[in-house]
Length: 163
Ligand code: S3P
Image (cartoon, rainbow, N blue to C red; front, side, top):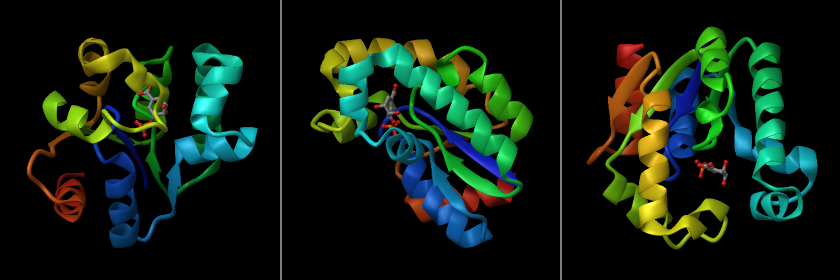
């Protein structure tokens, strides 16, 4: 089985992904880590040197590569992954997708001071706009899990129960 976690920055995709991987015994991959390894630069450095569009191209090609190559996988994506071109289709065709749904205020509290996320430069209003624009893509997931007030392990258990 392949499970892809999608959702906005700060929704806990990597943390929940690691829990899922422990519980199910499938290997865990973080798409952002894969990009960093492949390019040999941090995410903010990639954005600065090549721009967001180039980042999206690298992200999309690695997304396809990893989903096609592995037969068992827990994949955590970046917040923008499913909102680019046909990525959400690719994710849904090649894996079971799960949207980790979290209220914007909670996300903002978690990400506002993070220097490793270049898009936080948009500020609260800009990020709310981005969140609203991305919601329809996230909502195309096979499974939507409400995460507010739940611990990562509880969320992982709920995903396993509902998948
Ligand atoms: C992004 C989210 C980040 C990372 C990059 C762009 C986005 O991943 O891919 O900074 O467009 O929302 P996380 O969702 O893991 O923070």
